[in-house]
Image (cartoon, rainbow over the protein chains, first blue to last red):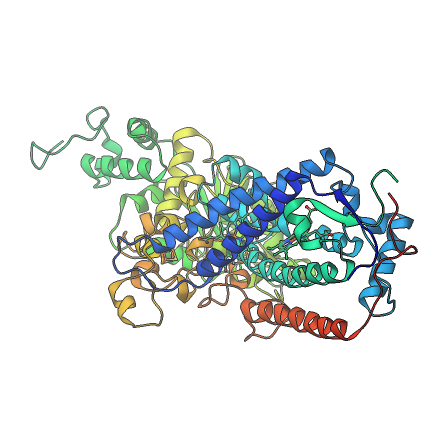
Length: 222
Length: 374
Ligand code: HEM
Ligand code: HEM
Ligand code: SF4
C-alpha cells in the first residue's frame, strides 16, 4: 500500500477513452468475424440462409466504425491535451524520452527496483502503440482494398485499388490475416502491462482508461 | 431475308442494313444480327448500340492481323480453332485476314518469315498484332528465337508498327507460367517487353475467344481499344470478380461449403471457397461468357478457380487447393494460423514468466527520484 499522498489528475480526455474502448470492442468483433471468414463452418441449412452474409456484414460495419474511431484518435492527437499528443508516441525521438524509456526498460528487465512514475503514457508502451497504429493502418488499407474489389469502378477502389496492383490480392489477404495475430500479440502484452503497472505504480492505471483520472505524487499546479 | 416465324422478337436494327458480304459467306442475316447482339452484350454496351456494331462489321474495311507465338503452349490458338461450329466469330477473324500465324498458315520457313516482314512493312500502322506467349529477356532474349531472331526483337518490330496489340492469354499479358518462380528465362509479358507499344491484355488460360472477338469488334466499331483497368485488361471482360458473378455464390453467402472432394456438398454444387477457390481474388467474366460454346467453366464443373487471369497467378494463387498462400520463409505445412497462434502463445508465455518473476520481487513505489515533473 502506498505510504505517499497522491493527487488526482485528469489525464485521458473523453475522445481518448472513447476511441480506446471503441477500438477494443471493434477489434474483438473484427477478429471473431474475421476468423469465421477465414475458415467458415458450413452452418447454412438452405441456400437461402445468410450466415456468411451476416458475418461479413458485421465485419464491414465494425470495420467502418473502427476506421472512424482510429481516424478521430489521430485527429485528437493534434487537438487534445499534451498526454494525447502525437509526440507522446515517439519518445525515442527526444533525449528526455529516450532516458525515460530506458528507465522503464530497465525496470521491466528486472535491472532496477524503483518503479518509474509516468503521468501520461508509459514511454515503453507508446512505442508499442506507434507500432500498433501502424498495424491499424495496415488492417484498414488491406481491408478496404479487399473490400473495394466488389466494385472496381467505385471510389473505394480508386482510393485503395493501387494496393492490388502493387501486391497481389492473395498477398493482401495473407497480410490482413497475419496482422490480426500481430495485434493479438500486442493485446496480450498490453493487458498484462496495464495490469502490472496498475499494481506497481499505484496510480489507478486500469481505471484511468474509464474515468480519465490518474494519481500522482505531484499536484497539478506544483 | 427469311424469318423462321413471324412472332419472333425483332432484334433492333435487324432490318436496317443489307449484308451481301455476309450472305456470300453463308451467314444468314439473322445469325449475323444475333452475333452483333451477343457482342454488344459482351462489351456491356446498351442494346441501342447494336446497329452501330452491325454497321461497323458490315463495312468491308478489313484489317490485317498478325498472330505471333512466343513462349506458349498454343492454348490460345487452340481455344480459337477448337470452337466447335464455324461461328461468325471465326469468320470475323477470317475476314480480318490473319496474314501470319505460325500454327494455321500454309507457308513455312523463310517463306513465312518473308510474308510477315512484308506485311509489317506494307501495312505499318494499319494492322493489329496478336501476341500469344511470354517473351524471355535473359541473355538478350536468346531463349526464344524464330528464324534466327529473338522474340524480344521480333516483338519490338511487330508491336511498335502496329495500330494496336492484343496480348492473348496470361503468358503474353504478364509472363504467365514461363515467368513463374524462379523464372529461368526471365520471361515477361508484352507490355513489359515493349514498353512503348499500345497493348491491351486479355489474360486467361486460355484466352476466352468471345472476349478476343469482342475486343476486335469494339476496335472496328469505335476505332479504339475498349477502356481498361489498372492491369491493362478491358473492363467489359475483367470488370467484376468471378466471386461476384459466380453461380455458387448463394451457397457462399448461405454458409454451404464443400469440405472434401466428392462429399455431399460437392455433389450438390455448394461453394468451393474452402477448397481453395480463387474466385474472390480474380477478375474475369468466366461465369458469364464461359468456355466451350458457353457450356462450361471450371467452377461450374466443380473445381475451384485457379486465378489464371491475374498477374503471377502461378506464384500468388498457389497452393491452388488452399485459401491462403504459404507464408514466405516458413515450411509448406505451416499455415498462417499456426504461425499466428505460435506468436501469440510465445508472447503469452513470455509475459507469464515475467509476471511470475514480478510477483517474487519486491520493488519500491515511485519516489522522489523517479517521479515525473509536470
Ligand atoms: C483489427 C482489425 C481487423 C481484423 C482483426 C480483421 C480480421 C480479418 C480476418 C482474419 C479476415 C480473414 C482473412 C482471410 O483469411 O482471408 C478478414 C477478412 C476481411 N476483412 Fe478484416 N479485419 C480487420 C479490419 C478490417 C477493416 C478495417 C476492413 C475494411 C473494410 C476489413 C475488411 C475485410 C475484408 C473485405 C475481408 C475479406 C472478406 C471476404 O473475403 O469475404 N477488415 N478480416
Ligand atoms: C483490443 C484490445 C486493446 C487494444 C488494441 C488497446 C490499445 C490501446 C492503445 C492504442 C492505447 C493508447 C491510448 C491512446 O493514447 O489513444 C491504450 C491505452 C491503455 N489501455 Fe488499452 N487496448 C486494449 C484493451 C485494453 C484493456 C482490456 C485494458 C484494461 C485492462 C486496457 C487498458 C489500457 C490502459 C490502462 C491504457 C493507458 C495506459 C498508458 O498508455 O499508459 N486496454 N490501449
Ligand atoms: S465457388 Fe469460388 S467463386 Fe464461386 S462463390 Fe464459392 S468462392 Fe466464390
